[in-house]
Image (cartoon, rainbow, N blue to C red):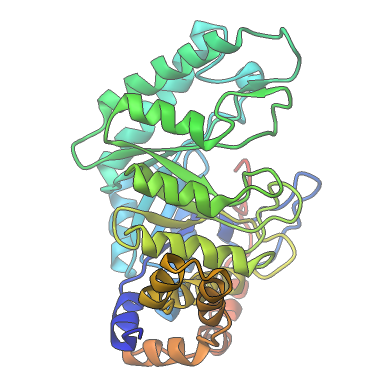
Length: 386
């Protein structure tokens, strides 16, 4: 039988990092629809993130994206965040928007462009030093569109060289999280297309290099939970970028497209010992047609619900059925946990944490939406490319 007290205790320790860019104007490659009241500065993004944490109790950090969140004084920004009850989390690099990166960044055939890209990554580590951030998150748009466009193996050599220089710059308590994506914007070859490529580079780099799994970065039918289980087994799962996809990298709210998949992933996390500080649970989403803060709150709640169900799996009964070759019985154990309505349990958890049991309703009553709508008039709204 599952120990409910232990489940509740575990849920109270959960931490889901929210992304600064999700509070600004972001959306599809077709169109970004601006919304009134969204942040104009990194400080205002932090203020919104603090509201999410105050209402959910499990979103204590907010990730930065450089240069979108560039400020003069990062230590001051970290202090600003702590005054509002949150901390600055992972620092995300950006080597995909400058014109110089048309043919790649750290894999580019031109050494000068590679130098520019690596210098940016080193700048991100400097920012980590100032903010106290532990994680540098790397995603590269590098790749080719045509056969023969560049030397595929040479690009891997350049990638390894650039990563090694940045790895050596990391502090003792810092780590590198390498993300992968099987296509887009490169359509013939992508330089970090899958978990195996990311794992191979991280393995060679050392213990401070880990793989991050973006749930939207896989081909249809990919068994993401298998990847999670394998990386956990190898001690190389550094974290997640949670979102949902129907077709490609849709960046919809986590749990929106396939909540059963999210449950299966979280079960492997729990089973593999990844439910703790060594695996970062981060959102990486855009909110183009939905209100941003409620969407982020709902996303955090979706992760909580999937986690609660994963924690409710009767692992003794499951192991017994598996050992007996009871195919349907084993599946039934998982399905019993997945089909459990965990919302009452989570309401109890929130009440025990001194929170409103319904964060969405609490946000609607808070007046924050009306406050920022009135105050954030004028200036340049934050958004992709800002």
